[in-house]
Image (cartoon, rainbow over all chains, first blue to last red; front, side, top):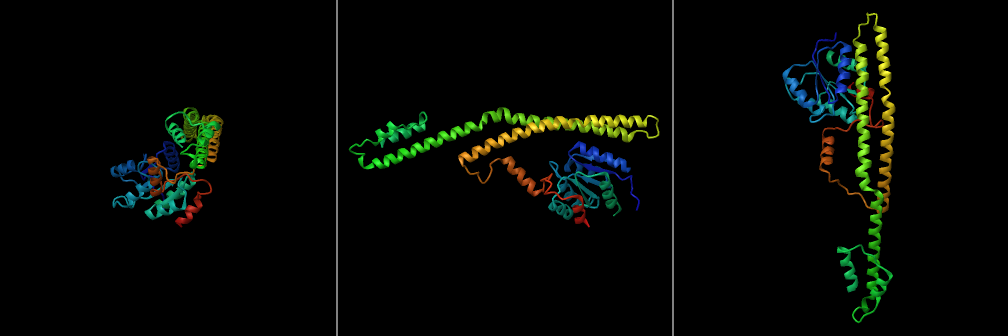
Length: 127
Length: 204
């Protein structure tokens, strides 16, 4: 199944540098429609304004973490089906299991490379 | 006994207590009413002497900790070094990313493409020089931390005071609770962290 490069993607991270890195990698993969938010609360506002085909989020942010954002989205009928990739430095097994239980679509551990991001997006968006 | 009582009262309100041999001799002089308590008095005077010696030692240890110097110089200096590393790292990252973005967006069919890529690579190499300065700043910060650690270790060992079981910093408690509830604890050390392949196995 071919990847739809036209899907709007929301990148959520409190570090502008990380947003810039993910933006560049997405651009190289062919995704041009990329928005950003600096934490879970800002992301929820964005998600109310617009429909996204994929959310790529960090875990450790304030005030609302990526984990809380994920749980909010999965509890919301309008957002529960939106693919969600967690990209985080939280690399303990209990975090991965908790995110999986909460309904995360896939999980990337920082630092990561372009190939990993590409593979996860393909796996999530083709599912 | 009345004399020791006066000495103890003076200790609470007056100058530091210093029991001398003559104090003890005078305290030990028998009187009509105090003769039966002479041994007790000597014991009390000895104990007060021990307390005074401990207080003096404690004061010396606190002075060796040099808390005023820690607060006015050492810790602010440490914060300054770490802030400078943060700032230098951010500036270098911006420079490197800008160069990479310029190269990635360059027209590959243009005649100047090779030269622009070469210029971009040189820019990245130059920006990496931040590591030298950052390394020196971090080395200075590590030395300061090691010095603080040495002083605290010496203080803890010489006073023998046990740590309180709970800390009373409200902000620290809130941070700890938030971390536990929301599983926020990263980045992990190398031995705690699992790699991408281990994560992938949990999704298979």
